[in-house]
Image (cartoon, rainbow, N blue to C red; front, side, top):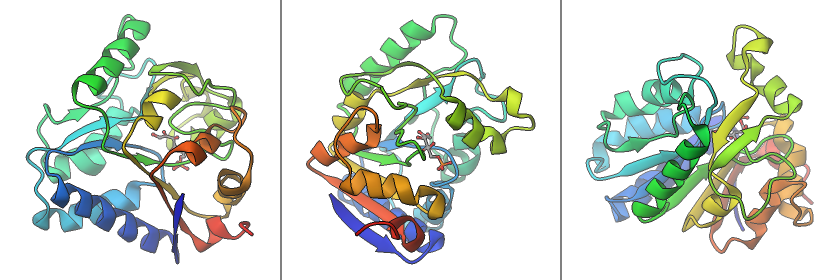
Length: 240
Ligand code: F6R
């Protein structure tokens, strides 16, 4: 795994955006895998600033995950997040951006449809990831099978706790989500994982130096041929 050390959150975000812009310039019909949460917000802002010099009309995006039960217009849904923070500012067409529907009547069927859609689009060229403090990637919590494809997951209390900051009340955080599986993520041709702050220090150390185990889902990335980790000094401070 290639590690790019950034000074701080801003520097991490700018480095990540430049790298994404470079990939889009190389391959304008790129299929991007996108993440939500606090970590990629700065990257999306930096990408919006670079948008003038990047061809955007042919790219496709697939997001990692969505909360179960939240319709796209819900302010805490990942549909809403992506629209506000990236899709509208970049003026991407509705046919260019894809997320699983958390409010589908049959969530199981929706997970299968989403997985097929990714395959039919030729798979993900560049997948952007954050990392949970417990090592989750997407919403693949500790114990998730490395063979998993897009599926429904029950969120761990620690993940609901970590994400409560985005909701008015902690109780409002959904208990379930639909997420790309670990196998889906591993089939991406290139993976870029971002991490910032001391809160992620232990997870980043484990990711780089720990053993490969389903108990720490991100460790599977050690087996991927093309991973770039962009992390700031605080997140890298535990690495030997
Ligand atoms: C979000 C996602 C999650 C987050 C992770 C870190 O789409 O898939 O795995 O990347 O929970 O979240 P933040 O960036 O808020 O610390």
